[in-house]
Image (cartoon, rainbow, N blue to C red; front, side, top):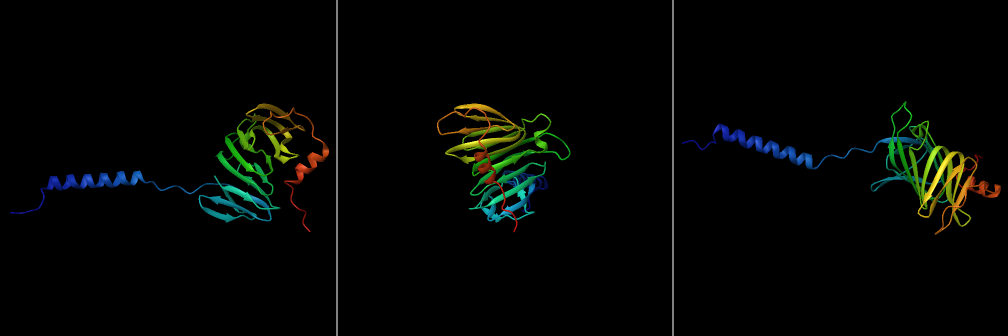
Length: 219
């Protein structure tokens, strides 16, 4: 008498085994590599990017990846150009991450979110802002900046956190209040207080702000 399983029962076991294998594969998907969203334009002194637990040094032409934790050391500067034309500059001892980047090449619009956890920065908007703006949010240590057609500086200065608009418009929104800045206007945010009224900055403060994101001249 044969001990082999009936043909139908053998087929049933095969189906069950294949189904189990498929479900196991679906439960542990392979994570896709992060997308390249731009490239480094210039670096002064030490700068790096971290993905998960892997850190790599940055130099000119190096790729910028989505969710990169960009960092700069003492006396450092980093300038990166994203695929939509946005230019991000980070001053010394800075930390910045692009948390959202939705862009279709050749088209205006999309969405972008940039988090600046530390250090001075300069943001020059690209195509994601689109013709009406409002598609970009910059998170800072004191609140959020909604930008429109913008070139904007932000960072610690004169005992507070400053925001200066060089072009376009920016709404500075904190837990204590909000202010709308137009071209040539700035505000100061001090601990526990609402943003100061929009107005022109003293020339000395403006010059010192610009220095924080300026590269040293080549010898």
